[in-house]
Image 1 (cartoon, rainbow, N blue to C red):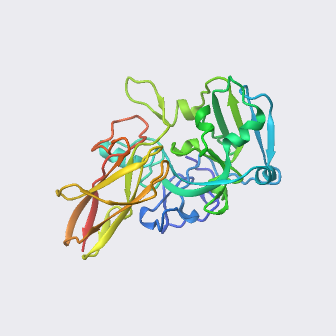
Image 2 (cartoon, rainbow, N blue to C red):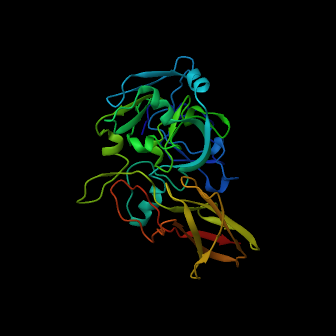
Image 3 (tube, helix red, strand yellow):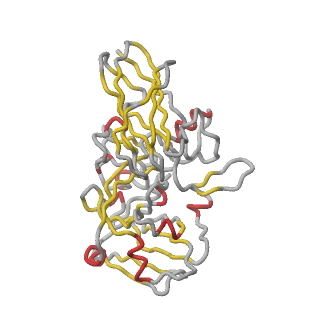
Length: 352
């Protein structure tokens, strides 16, 4: 955590408490779940996860370099090249930090984890517009020896994380230039960022200035020391897709008025689709919620159910299930860094 820099300069966009939750680092801000107006998360409240202050980059001097032992030649692109030379595509995809709900994970085990103390808000969905990464790699001439692709950011931390060649060549792995129909904001990666569909947010490197195509597996802090599952007696395993989980669009704890109403939320299953969402009030039975879509891998699904609550204290539990039949567990197995928490949460609600 940075303490020597004025936290007001660490990110560019205004951070409004009515829309975002301060994670306490001066760099990281989560979306308030009760301030999600539609399928897409608006730019003013899309969560921010930074390892260093947001860099101020000039598109007129910025370049992107593709190089490494897995290509035949180094290729450089300017910002204008990206807009003029390549067809643009748009995809709706969700990004989630692997540390989302870390504070709740700690409460579940009665111990505080290190790292950003996220609540439920380190997740958001946007329409990303850009160039399929494979279109940018092709002019460099991929060799038969190419195995991994690693974007690298231009922030002070030089954020970087490798992915297998097959994931880099997937049609929905993009170098994004725009977000929700607007030029990419500085806090979200301007001039260009990678969007790796269905993977943890740390794979979608922001402020990209270099892409290495390697002919050997790459080991960097982001896939060996951090963003890995570490459990006692086991080797570290890099995180890729995040597990199925659900989000209730209410404050924690919530206060509701009596009377008929609709409870809404989101469910997300990483690279997989959400197949079902069930809910339970207090000690009642599990009942199915209605899914409102979209039915997309790599994007969250909206859900809802009607409720006419009696006055008093209640506990709401929501359980999502993915297309392979994997459901949220009652408890998440321990891992040393507090990643991938997806337990069914007992959401406290007071009706008064």
